[in-house]
Every structure is written in C-alpha cells, then in structure tokens.
Length: 214
Image (cartoon, rainbow, N blue to C red; front, side, top):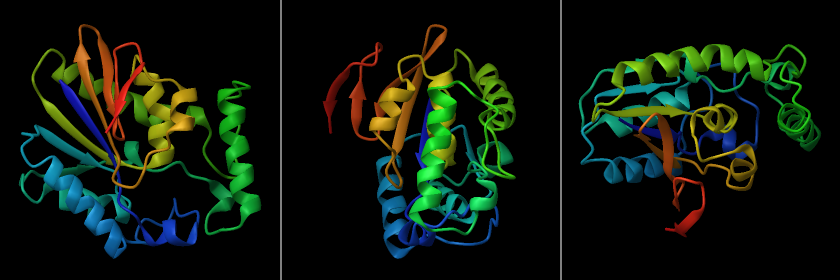
C-alpha cells in the first residue's frame, strides 16, 4: 500500500496570503498553480492509482482533476481532507492574523493544548476527529495490498495530521519543511507501519534520517 499526499497548486489566495478555508468556491488555481499541478501529473502518470480522494475546496478539486486527467478515475471528494477552518481569520491577509495562526500551531504541538482554536475555528482535536476515521478506514481497506492511493488536500491539514500516521516524520521536521504548492509526500506500508520515503523532494530513511534532497 502506498499513499501519495499532494498539496494543491498555487491558488489566488496564496498570492494575496489570504485565509481562504471556508468558502469552497473562492480562489481557484493561478496559471502557475495549474502548471505546477500539470508537472506533478506528469510525475505520477505511470502510477496505477486504485482511488483518488480530494478536499472539496476549489483549488484542491482543480488540482485533483488535473492529476486525474491521465487516469480517468472517479474522484471522491471528502470533508475529511478540508483545510483547517481558521474561524474569524477567514478573509484576512494581515501579518497579525498569520502570527496568531502560527502561535496556534505552537500551542497544539509544544503546549499540547489540542482544544485550542481561533475564535469560531477548529481545534486540533476537531481536525483529528474528521481526518483519522477516514484515513484509518482507508488504511484498513488496503492494508497489505499493492494499492496506490492519491489524496489531494492542503498544507495545514497535512502538517497537522501526517505526523500522526507517518512513523518516521514528526512535527519538528514538518515545521522545517513546509510543503510547497503541488508538493508530494510519498509513504508506503512496511510491516505494520506507514513510512514516509519522500517529503516534498527530500528522500527519507525508515528512521526519518534525510538521505538526500532531489
């Protein structure tokens, strides 16, 4: 079993640094974002995916559709892969909001306050409650098979949730290697563990040691 986690390509919200996590039809991919997704699609052309899942947000949907163009599968859209809901920060693009948002992740990871949230936003536990059952069901369904599964989503949800499921990647590593637009995390089942073998161009060992950067 292999998981291919792909972040969406550059969106209009990335250009303006705007929180855009609630209104799903806003902020499509830019021309550059489409090109990024197309380049990733070429990288993955030869992979025989069993299933493709995507966040229902426009930028993720558009990325998934580009990735799926040569595979012809039915994309399954799930709220489990939605970006973290930043609550009252929605629509803001100021540095103060982003600084507070960074502090929220620090509160989760360093202080272990997993119920902390921005006003009217999601906590870490809220995200975990929607992501983990979906991921666990998928992992159990395809355990000990040669299935290849593509999940298209967002930086926030991936950085919060992937260290929970990857045996050799922790939060310190993730915070130092923020996923780029159309960035890929490749993980494979080895025994009873899911091992990250590549994180956005960085090849990793089963213990998390960086082998090389490509």
